[in-house]
Structure formats: C-alpha cells, structure tokens
Length: 410
Ligand SMILES: Cc1cc2nc3c(=O)[nH]c(=O)nc-3n(C[C@H](O)[C@H](O)[C@H](O)COP(=O)(O)O)c2cc1C
Ligand code: SF4
Ligand code: SF4
Figure 1 (cartoon, protein in one colour):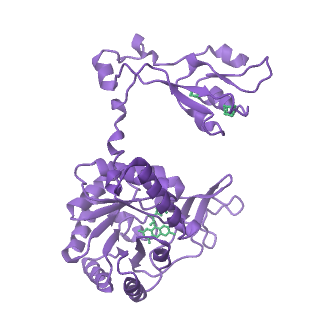
Figure 2 (cartoon, rainbow, N blue to C red):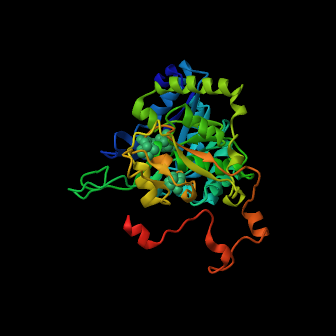
C-alpha cells in the first residue's frame, strides 16, 4: 500500500506456495568502485509467510486500492495445488497471476521455478493446468538460465498464457571471502549459488525481451524485468518490446520513492518525442536489432578528440595502444598531454570514447560519404569474401599491422 501511495500502478506479490522457509543470511552483492550493488544476488526462496496471511493482505490491499493491479506470483507442484492456489488468490481479489518458472535456487532442486522454465514442454503443461481454472490473466515468468529464451516463451504462448514476464534472476556466485574461503552470501560457513539481478543484468534482460518481442510465435504482451532503476531503463525495455515493466532491486535499494522520478522522466521524454501513448514507443527498437550479416560494412566512423575538453589523462592512449589498434599518438615534443588520433589506424571501435572520463570529449565521427551500403550478403555476392586463409581478399578491412620490432621499440 505504501508503494501504491507513492505512485506505482501495480505490484507483483512475493511468490506464494510451499515451503514457508528461508535461510540467514541470504543476499550478496557486487560493488564496483564507488557504486554499491551494481549487481545483487539472493538465495531467498518464496514468501516465508503462510498463504492465509498473504491472502488476507491481498484482500485488504484490493479494498483500499481497487484500481491498482495486484498480481499474485505463484509456485506449487501438482495440478491440484495449482488449481487450488489460483482459486484462492482470485477469491482474495488478485487481478492476475504470474507463474514463477524462473527462480534459479532452492525451488528448482525440487522441480519448480527455473526447472520448469528450462523444460518448455513441462512449462506448457503447467500453463495449461492454470488456464483450466483461471478467470484472470495468466503471466508466465521466464528464467534467463537457458540458451534460447524464445523456446519457453513460445511454449507459454502455446499453453495459453496471456503474457510473459522476463527476466527472473541469473544463476550466480557473487564472490568468495578470501579468509574463510566461503562464497557469499554465507550460511554457517557454506553457500549456494544464487540469483543475480540489478543494474548488471539489464543487458541480458534487454536482449531476451527483444528476442521474445520479435519472435512471431510468441506474440503476447511482455512484462520487462531486469536492472530497471530509472525512467531511461524502463524506456529501453519498452523500446525493445516490453509492454510494461517491473522493478525489484532498485526498490530494495532506494525505496518506493523512485517511482516519482520514473514517472516525471517518462512523461517529459514522451512530450519531447511527441508520443501520446506508450503504444507509440513500445517496440520501436525491435526491428533495429538485426543479425550481424545485415549491417552496413561500408559505414565507417573514427574517433575525434575535443582538445578543449580533454584533461590529458591519456587513458584513451593506453587503451588504444594496448587493447585496440595503436591509433592514438602522444605529442612527445611540445609538452601537451592531449593525445591525437592517427586516422589511418583507427578502426572506429569506440574503445577510447568509452574509456574517456570526460563526457563528449571523444566522439565518433562518420567518415564514409554515406553513398554506399554493402552488407555481408552483398559482400559475398560481389565475390569479395575470402574462401581460404591465404586468399588475397582475407586481409581484413581497416586493419594496420605494425611490425613487431616497431611495437617493441615503443
Ligand atoms: C531478494 C529477491 C527476491 C526475489 N523473489 C522473487 C520471487 O519470490 N518471485 C519471483 O518471481 N521473482 C523474485 N525475484 C526476482 C525479481 O522479481 C526480478 O525478476 C529480478 O530481480 C530482476 O529484476 P531487478 O533487476 O529489477 O531486480 C526476487 C529478486 C530478489 C532480489
Ligand atoms: S581519455 Fe579523454 S580526457 Fe583523457 S586524454 Fe584521452 S581524450 Fe583526453
Ligand atoms: S576508436 Fe578504437 S582504434 Fe580508433 S582511436 Fe579509439 S580505441 Fe583506437
């Protein structure tokens, strides 16, 4: 109810089912330099409160907030249990159910959670069981711990799911205590793999959301989850096909109040772009993700340093010299620490601009004249692709290969 008062439109209730048990401790994190919890990890199971308590509270929440969506997340085993619990939460007033086929720890060892999400045929069967009785929409929540997430997504659609949600957490160990040798989080000197989430997993989630959104056999709405902390993250999920979004770690970290910035930021973005409804932006980026072979091989950018912004840290020089293409030079004589780009060596990889600590100091500038476009298919068709290692055409594009002795002299 605090969340709804703060401005959230709905909530997915902590997964209900059995057993009602947990360990202590149960959370771990990856801190990176000055940032706390860039990745978060838990070995928590489902709700550790009895079903009756949860049902009573769902009912109470719906009484106070009839127009807010309350989705009951569920995880049980047998067909009879699924039928019973779906009816129970519906009677309590839940607006929908979400089937937790994603939890990668504790429950999967007993054949639930991600154990179901990794077996599309089983997932489809259980979805059908739920659909036999459900009067409210059924959302199937998917695990990312699988090679191709569109397999369970298609199974969910085939089983009659009204929507899918993804991602649940990524199986992980976040660290090891170097003195006790026990991985974290630690329970009486031992640990177990947990589920990873938070900002670090957003790229994995975006890719999976997009893969489901583009697949013609999925074709149902997608609730995007994973690493959403602010309105920009939410918009990215929606541009790649999510029809709504869910937030977990960021609320645990910063509290319910983050919704205020998320809403105002989203509204301002929509006004600036001229979007009247969310439908105007949902899925806009889906078709802009293409197989590599469709990319334009003639498109070429090179790095450009803004000398006025440069603080002379030379991080770009080190990165390009040792990790890219030796395309950044230093003025050794005139005393300036501002580096320069050796245009003919630069392959336009972006590394220096990513390393540079000053915003917009290194930009990537288009240098081809935009008159030609050639993708891999054209390349092969135009007989440019090498067929053997010694083929004259195998030299690669845009590569300058220094003599080893020149490299060592530096
Ligand atoms: C402490 C914790 C408990 C979670 N419990 C559940 C759960 O009971 N059911 C579920 O479907 N997902 C659960 N999740 C997964 C989240 O709902 C979400 O899918 C995942 O954390 C990714 O989103 P995020 O990056 O916003 O955290 C839990 C995550 C955390 C961190
Ligand atoms: S990393 Fe950026 S600021 Fe540092 S030397 Fe290179 S261009 Fe200048
Ligand atoms: S874009 Fe890549 S190759 Fe070009 S200067 Fe930067 S790091 Fe070097």
